[in-house]
Amino acid sequence: MPKSSIDSTASAVARLIEIGRKQVDDFGIACVVNVASGEYRSEFDRSIEYFTEEELEEIVGGFREAGFYTDVFVGEDSFIRWVDGGGLNHFARNRTLVYNTAQTGSAPGRKSLIPAFCQLHGISTLNANPYAVSLSRQKFHVNAILRSVGIPAPECHWYVGEGRWLADRRPPIGRIVLAKASFEAASIGLEKRSRFEFTGAEDEFLEELVAELSQPILVQEFIEGREAETPVLCQGNDVLTLDPVGISIGGEKNPGSLFLDYSRVCNDDYGFYDFAPNEQDLAHRLKAIARQVVDTLQFGGFARVDVRIRDGGEPLVTDVATSPHLVRHSAYGHRFANLGGRSAMASALVGLAVLNKNKNIVEER
Image (tube, rainbow, N blue to C red; front, side, top):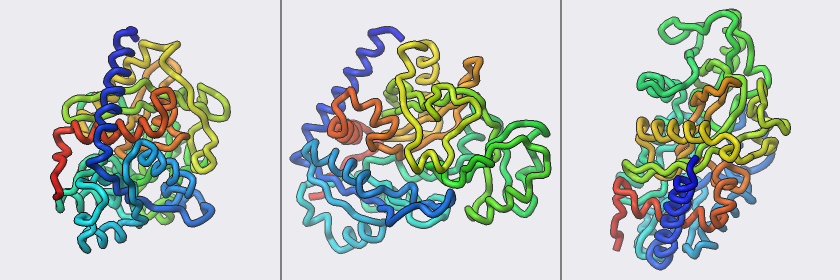
């Protein structure tokens, strides 16, 4: 990757940070979150996506360290009741930006409730629009859309339940596949046995997953090789991609047949490394793919595009995120460690919202 490209990216991020820092007297932040209540019970426990007290402090601390007045609302109900009770009229700043990670329950589309509520009431957010948020959590639909426009992604099949496959299409016999929850993130439902050679006799196992997760199961071609995540900052039609972040599993930068199952994610049992310095051509390609993805899916704000890379160098998009984790142990945390840390990341997020034409920042007083 040419040095001029690296410099221009750093300059663009610095500009976002500067713009964000100029908003501290005008904007306050309302963080709508779920907080984990205790230890995770099983690989089907959705509370792994909830913040621990330490992670919540990282997020809120980032905004406050950057100078933003910040209030926390635990759960969607508390925020909605606050707004309905006139809370915006008594907020400590003239204007409000909502940062949402809350997703109470198990139904598809649940994470779009607060973005949709804010859109209805003309409240500005730091997240993608409600449609993009819902779409990003439907893995089969995302995969189908990406493949339809020529973006490289693994072949996927959809087990609906009760022995039924969508369009009666199944993986080829002998293919190594990964069985994933359709509407979840953070490796919910993924365990070691989720990766297997398809023989055509797996309906009983898949039916078990349907029952445990209350949703259809994505059966995705497993890509043996490396894994990387590309942070993407989306500003209307302009897309700023940061350098891809490599994922090491079991201490291996090329994890081969290993993958991020629930146990590894739950225990932060994986690492990050700088991908670009030694493979600039591949890093450039991953950034180009990430731009195509967010342009196709019309994401906004901070997003992330995940890939697995075959040993021959072929990258395929395996997942996307519109609310990527912004804690220290994350691709964003790794990338912003050299850009000013958590306060710079919070300022950049605000700066991006202010610039983003689609956010329609509104005057509330």
